[in-house]
Every structure is written in structure tokens, then in C-alpha cells.
Image 1: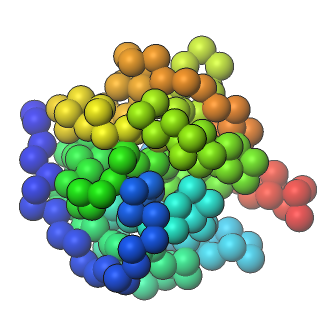
Image 2: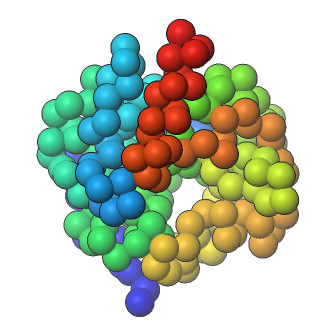
Length: 214
């Protein structure tokens, strides 16, 4: 089923014009069925909620950050210590990741040369990899850049405007990685990218890793 995201609502804007050519989208609308709870609300010691930490990560990429939310809204907003530039509520979040991505694309400024995209559940991403992604995109904004997963690439990524038609044609749970691998996006080393929060076991493992780093 193809999802139209035009019904998504932009719920606030801070008036910032900084970095509108290089905005960032944080995708955090899903139910997290495998986790068994709203993982956006999980608390990282000293860092706020998982979603708040993801917004802070996105600010390494851009000062103009959009958070696409759905399940658990507005509670996820009220508990988010790091506020994005915009909250975008996607009413059809239950129909798959592609709809959240498309909702974010529709909300971007006409000035945007592309957009960074990252998920709300990769708290071990290192600042060095995100900084390199931001640098690469600004040097060559017409090229797709994506995190190196070894045999493939994926998010976090920079998606140039030329690829937006392919992004807006995605359906169901297909994400940006489908397009990025098809077009041969250039890989950026991204330590921590393989560890995400999908299950309670993942969460316990990540908390142990963060405690070791403290």
C-alpha cells in the first residue's frame, strides 16, 4: 500500500533559518513492537530520553532538525529534553517506515539541497562519524553519502534532492537504505552504527556499553 504523507502536521517551528539547505530528519514515529514499550521514552543516564539523545546527535549534522513522530505523541515530545526545530506528527505511522520518511520530506524547506536522515534508536553512534558525514555532504551535496555497514550502506545518511522522487515512491517498511544501495551511495565510516535498540536485550547491552564508556 502506498502511503500519502501529506496529512502530516508540522506542530511547531522555532523560526530558525540556519542550515535550511542541510536539514536533518530524525525518524521516531514507530510503535517498537519488538521492544514491548515506547522506546522513544527510554532514558539514557545523564542524556535524557532515547529520542532526546537522537535529536542531539542530529544537531551534529545540522542546526535545523525535524523530528517525525507518531506513536506516543505528545508524551514523547513533553519528555524530550533536546527539542528539535520542528515536530512533525505523522498520523499514519502504523503503516510503515516509508510514510514517516515521506512525511519528513514533504515538510522540508524549498531551500534544502537534500537532507540528513537518522533513526531515533542508535545511541552508540560516534560524533566522529557524524561529523564526517556532515562534512562530506557540505563538500559534495549532489552525492548520496551513507553509513558503512560492511556489505551495504544505510542511515545515518545524506540524501540529495535529486533522489527525492525515489524516496517518495517507497512503500511500507522500506527505508532510505533501499534507495541508497540502489544508487551506490558513498560509504562513510560510522562506529556504533550496527548497534540499535530493537529488543530489551539490545537495550541492556547498550546500557552496559554506555556505562563502560562513562
